[in-house]
Amino acid sequence: MAHRFAILLVLLAAAPALPRTSPATLEDAVKTAEQEMGRSHQRVAEALENLAEAHRLQGRMPEAEKSLRRALEIRRAGLGKDHRLTRQTERLLLEVIRP
Image (cartoon, rainbow, N blue to C red; front, side, top):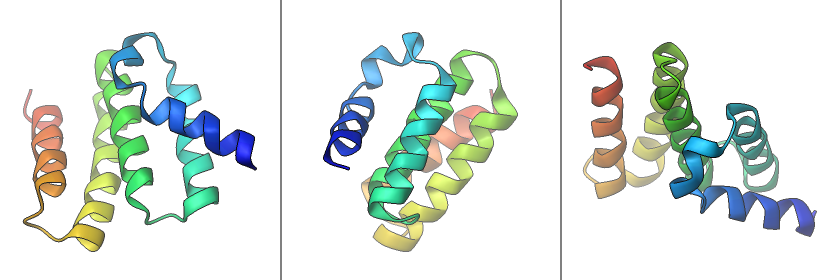
């Protein structure tokens, strides 16, 4: 379990490497985060944002939108609608749905 958690933290911190990270790897990071921390943890939202960015870079906007909408739900529920991370996720979603 500790090994999977360490891998997850590396993937979550790897935002600059996203263009080289496959969506499948990031989907695994989302699943690991859900298993280790719970489906509504803020790290899950972060993993979903990374997954959405990978999809966006590949031009897969529907998948990016789906991940960002879920991340936004987690952010709003856990942090509130006015928190800076919630607003950041809203901006990311707007960039995807209004290219």
